[in-house]
Length: 282
Image (cartoon, rainbow, N blue to C red; front, side):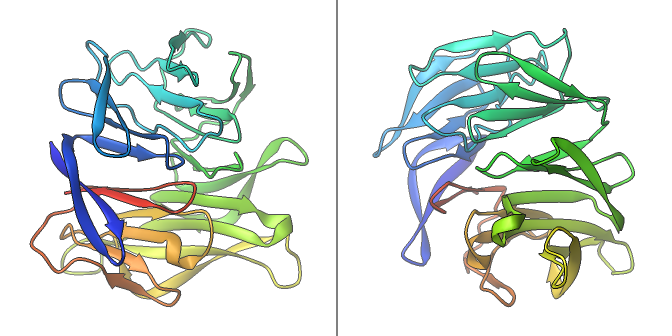
């Protein structure tokens, strides 16, 4: 397991608790799971145990849904779990499928099996898309982006209610903090493996809108940026964090990724909330 930290006033402050996974929604929905499959919620001072979830591994993404709605995945059964504001856990049966991941925003969730992609509502209703995404990410607006098995990039067009593929881009990881293209709010980042370096790394790319057509996107490479994990927040460029292959943690300052910890800690995960509060595990 790992020690829990919160980024406050320019430095990481240790918080009580040891977790294997942490996921941040709004300031009142910070969830974690330890290596015994016990589920915790931050109460403002410490992580309080709310449930022993037997025979389950860590939840993948206690996502940035609103009004206390939480989605998770049982890593043992690969089934989906919905947690309402009263913290009632409901196991969802979606065509008997086993899922790879679930993400959520705007009171809805997206889940992938590797063969199909599902849009899920709070009431258990769903819409199926015959799109075999292998990775998926979305911000609080609920508009997802994903990668297929070839690394091809797809984004959801909320006006036409369908997915579209971007041409000529191939990535290994994608992270979405916000996707409001029509309003000029776009926070989509991606990593692409670079085998030409002495130690294999991942280059960092950022999605931008075409100057002439805001409905078109293109990815720009950030020079001298190499990360293993990238996590995008919801507002501006300074809400993007990453961890490199040496387990050091960085924050994007608008121009480049800058180290935010000079200790010998080895960082394992970072999660950014709706109001851009940053929690991490080391």
